[in-house]
Amino acid sequence: MNFSKRQFVAATLALSAGLGSLGAAHAQSGLDDVMKAKVIKIAIPTDFPPYGFVGTDLQPQGLDVDTAKMIAAKLGVKVELVAVTSANRIPYLQTKKADLVISTLGKNPEREKVIDFTAAYSPFFQAVFAAKSLGISGFADLADKTVGVTRGAIEDQELTKLAPANADIKRFEDNNATVSAFVSGQVQLIATGASVAGNMMARNPQLGTEFKLLLKDSPNFIGVAKGEDALRTKVNEIIAAAKASGEIDTMAKKWLGRPAGKLPE
Image 1 (cartoon, rainbow, N blue to C red):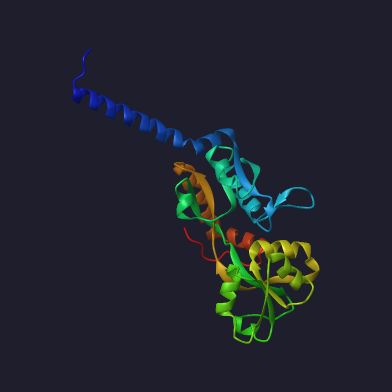
Image 2 (image 1 turned 120 degrees about the horizontal axis):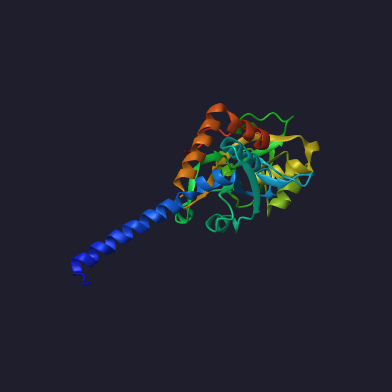
């Protein structure tokens, strides 16, 4: 049978449309697969307290771990926690080793080219921390106080802008030196990231350290494979409900010492 050029083009377009529909159907299979298997595989960190780390019982714990468990519970399925690093968390999502990535994942244009994101579920921030006994309610209270910070870090830049001129800012060459200065009492306060502070507080509970002042907020998002709109929409519904009920704030207070506050959709 001979095809005219017009018939050939029409047949080609019809075939492409059919393949596109199949591709779309395949791309939307993530939520169905999870519900059928009654298991959701969620990538989490295990070396980044307080978001994800291994506890004394050798089990993963942290804000990201609790969030993963919450989402699985709301879906009515079991959770399979998959330990990942910063380097392999996106490849795990792309190769279907994980259905979701909940691992302090920030959103940027480069990442948006290869994966999709839900609404934000938690803050990631730089802040000033100190002992509970030290009364600090605003940046003016840093006057005549010694504050340790890592030279050139984001928190150094923000602290320099916000602290009063008579705050005694002591700069150290790396996070370890900054933490050591605070733990040993060389400085009264420490300006650092939530993860560094969480690790420090977990290792030195006797210091009674707590969150005092926010320097900069950068929210975390949940990573979803490209095209998995049904799964992304369902997770967004769960996040929205957890924000409304206060569950998101409760988890943030538990692990970060402060509520999540208003997070971007």
